[in-house]
Structures are given as C-alpha cells and as structure tokens.
Length: 143
Image (cartoon, rainbow, N blue to C red; front, side, top):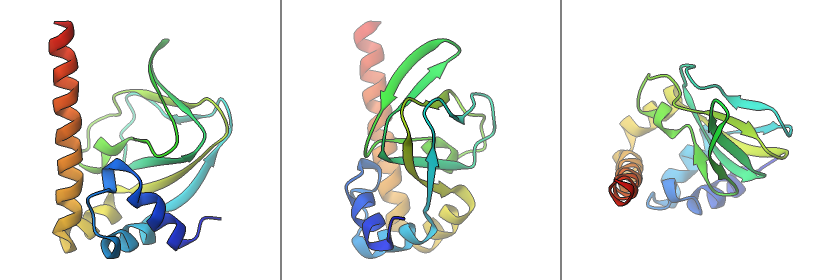
C-alpha cells in the first residue's frame, strides 16, 4: 500500500506533475488510487471511452494498435492522460508486459481539483503541449 506522502513524492517525480507545487500534489494524491495488473493483463482497450489516466509506479506496459507495438513505458511514465481532458475513445491498447503497479486518477475528481487549483491545469497543459511539439518534430523528421 502506497502512503499519501509516497504518492506526493512519486507524483513530483513524474513529468506530468513536476511543475505543480507540493501542496497541490497532496490534493492530487488524495484522489489517486493504487491499482495493480498482472503480466499479460489488458489495461486499456483501443476504442473504449476512457475516464482515467495511469502513472506507472513499478513494472512495464506495452502500448499497441492491433499487433503493432508503438512503445513500451516504465516507471514514472504515464498513459491515458488524454482521457483526463476529453471524452474521445482510447487511441491505443495498453497491456502489462510484467506485473505492474500504477496510480490511477479519475477524470471527474481531477476536473474538480483543476477547477479549484488553476496551477494543476497549467502544469498538465504545459506538459501535454510539450509532448505534442515533440511528436510534431518526430513527424517532420520522418516526413
């Protein structure tokens, strides 16, 4: 079982939350649930409507579409974060490559926090736009 203090320290070490002040992270930690998945378990299914994001505490996952592996993610990386901001279907499937421990954050509770603490919204938006820029740069390199 991960304590609230451990959750705060973990969140602070993750890119997505690195710009958010510690006292605000304590509130995020308060809504974060610890979840575990066994090796081979399906975590997210492409096409499903998502309402939560996951941060990997321990283990590794594979992000894929059909049989094509897109990437592997490990400790301190996140997936499903777009579901915090929109109601669109999941863009890929995520499967546990090993036993995985994650912190799960639900959209509804996260929206409530963002409405109370604008710093949380700013931190998330900054990281997501940074990721979008990086993805665009990769596309232009291959284009």
